[in-house]
Length: 505
Image (cartoon, rainbow, N blue to C red; front, side, top):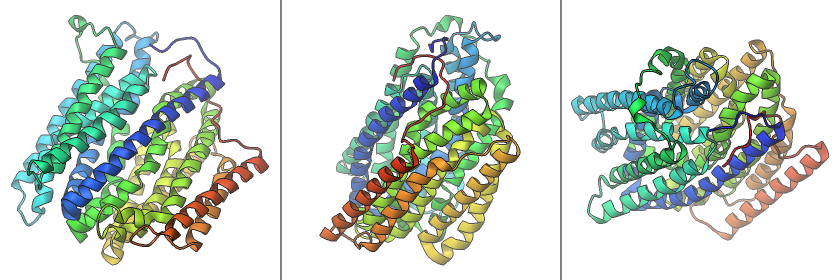
């Protein structure tokens, strides 16, 4: 259980960084598994089958945003109420987790059944055969992914990060990889990726259950009655709506690529999406600890102090993400071609997607305030950016192919960032400071300039020029970042968050 005695802000900041570094280390391990999986998927199964698999997984992940009922974020509030002085304080924390798991599983089963039913009755002319097969058989895993999110959120409430790191970074990706390779070797060339996904998901949930059992040693099942979260469903709906729109929004471009351009281009675009995921992981490395810390800082220090603290976190996240962007501009083409012939056609799309991810990763931290203070406003902002993305993608994708789809994502992300900043100023009377972002932005501009001027990133294979471009661009980025931080008196550090006590990672 989290201790009740207050801790210093420095303790909270160290906790965030410690949890972020633990999670980031896990993402490095996961990146190795992802790299191997993409090699297997691209070279053994090909762009078309990988495209069908990517479309099915995109539908699954968007569905998890609905069936998760926003509990991945709001479960912390439910558990905090349980340990406080409110009416639920006598309920064991494990029972709150069980309530959440039951609700999530019920919603997941309903959505998965609906998807499978629709796929079964759709004419073959509407959905490509490989995509229909992948979508039908991967739909039941909506329950597995949603349940794993809830279970790992519960372990993070106890401030034990290592279980999610091990589960998401080692257990899941390597089980998926091994399952896919064995399935291919056994002759399942058309469904091997789906079989791998099932294996990874089942093994992940087995590990998650063990982790929850360790974090909550007393389940007291004989006392369990249930029903405590059902009256709170109305409270969960605005954040759930935001999550659903965000889930569809972040995958809408892939859906439209599949519709307009077919499975092969969806595979190439899906590979570009996969290569930009380290940026998302860099942001998620901080999210696991930022979510509870933002809630606590809001209640203790208020809106302005929370926004100022988030600005320091944004500086660190942006510095990490811009390093990835510089590397992708310098060597993105050869990187893509490693996974199979023709994948380098996604180079321009990869750059645009990476830019969008960096913008969302940095400026999207303001969403935390909407989750706790203005959930309906957060929903409206997400809805506006979703409409912008739909309109732009429908117009851009037929014209410019996968680069147009990626451009629509970047445009919608900037619209969302602008609306978020406007609402924070008008409704919450806070203005997120931009000064902490200037050092990484200046360094990023310098590194990108070198990456563009030194040829090497657009080719179809690694060459000496590629390594020269990569080393020169990253070296310039690092040098300018160090110099700009020294001259501005800033540090790559997080400060200003309040803590509830000493925790363990």
